[in-house]
Image (cartoon, rainbow, N blue to C red; front, side, top):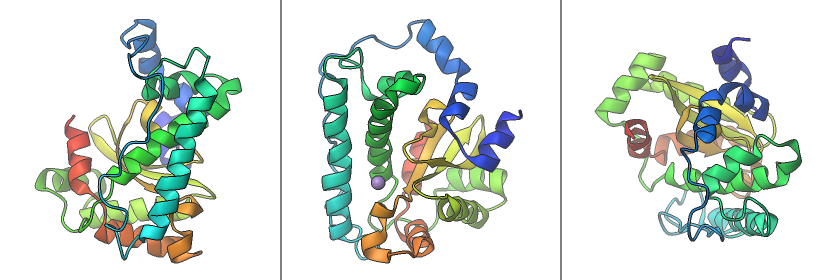
Length: 238
Ligand code: MN
């Protein structure tokens, strides 16, 4: 199977991760990740990068209150309970995601760990007064990969709107090309040897209080008025 076609046409899956993560497996086998990180025993909810009402009127404080205060916090609390006393207890978050994705019987740990990471990344993917013109270097990358900024945004929106059920749409860097991918439920491109640059949460809890069933309105408003292009460029340049 053509790996690129797989990413583009059907989105990433945990199976896709297994196919794509040969480099990560080599890195793990070579011991290039630390086995333990001091202080990583208990995962904490990272602070929001802005006040809960800072994204209004596009995303209300009420939505952020539940989404960050209940859902994101819930994933952190569940993860801490699930890893307590296991071999994952002392691992940093990204290592837990990589390790649990390999094991069918660790789905609950994978789901909660990936959702902690995905949400932290989602909050950073937006900012008050975001949207608008991307920085020049990112614009150039978009032109090279999609034809134009508008084409990039259209593909991003289309992936976000067409994701069936719960999941995420992502702008990623794969090699030296920007791509749009979508993932279901907790799945994340983090482990797929491609670099996430931005994400949009399309679980209903992300928009239902504000937009009910109008997912496209939420997605387009985020892309036009909140998306943090500078964060994407920082990630691309890392
Ligand atoms: Mn969410």
